[in-house]
Image (cartoon, rainbow, N blue to C red; front, side):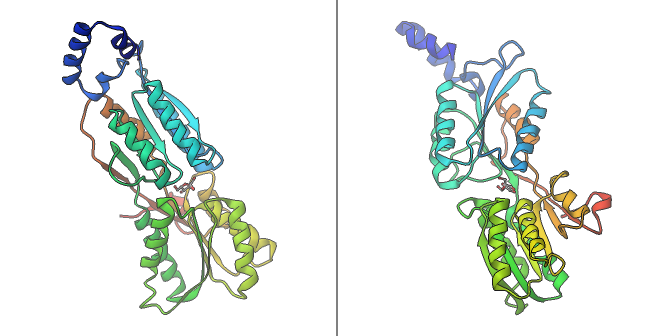
Amino acid sequence: MTGRRGMRRSTVPFAGICMLLLIGCSPAERTGHAGTAEDPWIIGMSQCNLGEPWRVQMDADVRAAAAEHANLRVIFKDAQNESLTQRAQVEEFVEQGVDLIIISPKEAAPLTRPVAEAYQRGIPVIVLDRAVQGDQFTTFIGADNVKIGREAGRWIREQLGGSGRLVELKGLMTSVPGQDRNRGFLEGLQLEENTGLQIVFSGEMKWLEPDARREMESALATNAAIDVVYAHNDPGAHGAWLAARAAGRENEMMFVGIDALPHEGQQYVRQGILDATFLYPTGGAEAIEVALAILRGEEVPKHIVLGTRLFTQENIGRGGDPIP
Ligand code: FRU
């Protein structure tokens, strides 16, 4: 930042020398920070909201990983589940002259452009968990949501032996994980071959427990029998269970979720509330490792895919099982 200010004030020959120096510099060197303990790299982290436990965990993972490195500092911003606020945060980070941006976007469409603009101005951008459109960012880190949805569909199909009445409670469908978890689920169910499987109710709970509870009340009111609830995240599955319990019907059906935080989804499985949950890693620690590599000028892959695990009543005691 001081460098930029200096350049603006300088005489033409001095600016010329800077320009020559800039051409040979790595992206990190182009910014004002040296990446030392005295002059640490600054990372701007825009989180789409901190109202959901999984996102609190992601920020905690970023914070813990960053604390291991004296040569970087992270500025956290919470967009409070507003895409326009999040867009403004990315623009603010650019104006501030941060060395790198990490964004976990709320929705793809409204955040694609601010991410692309930051990237085109030479600021590396790591997109975490929810994707944006196109390829104007440095790297994307996240688990494979189509695969997780497919595995959930397959597990449910196997549990039901090919016939049953299903409820699907979807995440926000303007976010890519919602779309992918729905698509994968349908693939995993193999509805053409398993004509006894029927999705009797489908609602959008937008990742939120109260919305899931409300949607599930409608599902219960309109369906005398339900065998399985598949929710796109654990708060959704828990909200559905709360609605079923209030109707005295929680033992009639299975509940399956995604996220598997130790103190949330895994705990629900231990308590017998959920029958299964699939790990959706936050990627917070990986984001810091990748950020450091980028800031050092190293090449990083465009897509980094994180693994998943399945937790059930049967395997929770041994920490779940990896899904190859
Ligand atoms: C939190 C969350 C998680 C979910 C992820 C998908 O906002 O809804 O529960 O797995 O986002 O992006």
